[in-house]
Length: 295
Image (cartoon, rainbow, N blue to C red; front, side, top):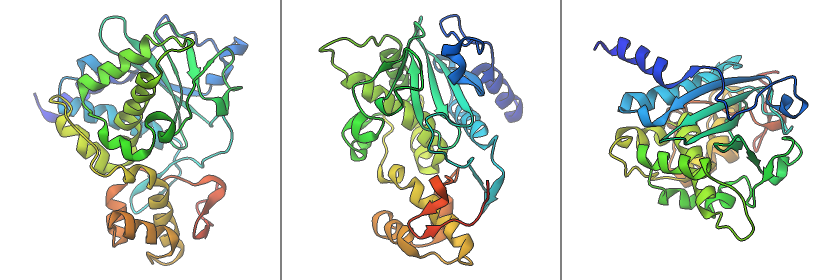
């Protein structure tokens, strides 16, 4: 099959807008569901993602959602919508993932930073974090924080995650069947959320993460060699934005961190690692305020 025809078919099969599954109640006229709007709703059948190009297609679809509200680019990279401090973003990506049997979940992903803020299990029950406990009426509050420290006891432990299609399916199953109870072991579900965040969100933000997972999507065994990339996405983004204001100079606190911790000696190396640029909260970086772009 011709490459472009194959890719078109993959998008049709794996990640197209569709009506929500029966388990997910998303009637905007119901007060308890109004938090979900506005949104994009995408469906991905992970079990049917049977090629490396199918994984690439999934990431491209998440990327397309992120850049939908993008008004600016720098160095050819889309800048996400301005990051807000509110629990509800300007727009959600409701990413519906289907796995084996009846396994089906929904991830609520922000458009301004691609963070996962909540998930619904196969019965449609929403689970979210304490920091936004009032956003979703009736949601179960997860007993861990919405950070990699809360999910896997620190970003360094992202390097212990074994990634690929089968791992993603197992993580999907853990979330699909999760029902919180007193004394239950929550380690599996927190780790499952970390796998989803890395596989879909970090891989969309950062080229090295996608490059680690994509070749081993089918065979499995992918690992993140430099987990620090994940927590330095904001600094990478700021370095690019600040350089624009400094006539291309690569210096300041962000650049120092990237040089010392990741060995990124030039702005070109930073640009080469990014797929999306984060617009920081309050347009503020360690180097000072970002005077462009403007909301």
